[in-house]
Length: 292
Image (cartoon, rainbow, N blue to C red):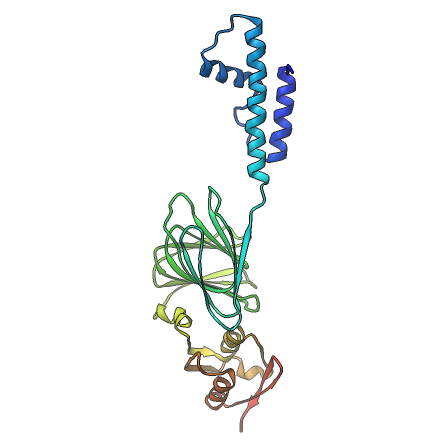
């Protein structure tokens, strides 16, 4: 089959459109030049030219067909989830992830040639294998965290108004979706993104190790408002905790618990320290007026 220049270019346009690949320098005329140069052929006989044009057409079809296959080939995704436990994951590039309670991580079975992208719901601690040519990106609800190789923690539970990224080693950039501004963190710093006002607060952490105390089964509340404590306990135990008394929401408490203590034991101790009442029905806990 002999293809004219116009037919070859039309075919190229259709294949490029279907694969979203760049048109680049591919064209019938340019392809003939390349193949002529590679094969050291001279335009000496019409038959040679016809064969060359045919070969160029077949070559282009093969190249773009392969590109289309690579682009359209489905990517196999894996999802690891936790309930009332933590779980370790080793990613295809050798990076390590520890998932906190009631969290999930979705990642490809094999990373692409351009980047390493994972999706987090909940909280996880990452130890990323360094690879300058392939940035590691965590999509966490309303933010993107991009790194090359580092250790960091991301807390991005759906029921929270804030997403917090804490850095322990290396460097990361944090960017909110729909916001061109981003923050580059240094070790012992955090970036907290507010999903309501879409602003990022950049802070220096006094004790960065407290951010990952959960890895050792420890829960630390360091002068935290009761409404924040309620969110953390909700995420750790898979329940819903509501504070019905507005005056209690910003009441600050300091406490430390381990994973051997039940939610009831924790609430009983907080009740004494905070002077409030609480009641539980199935997975709904209500914190009510202060004790008299």
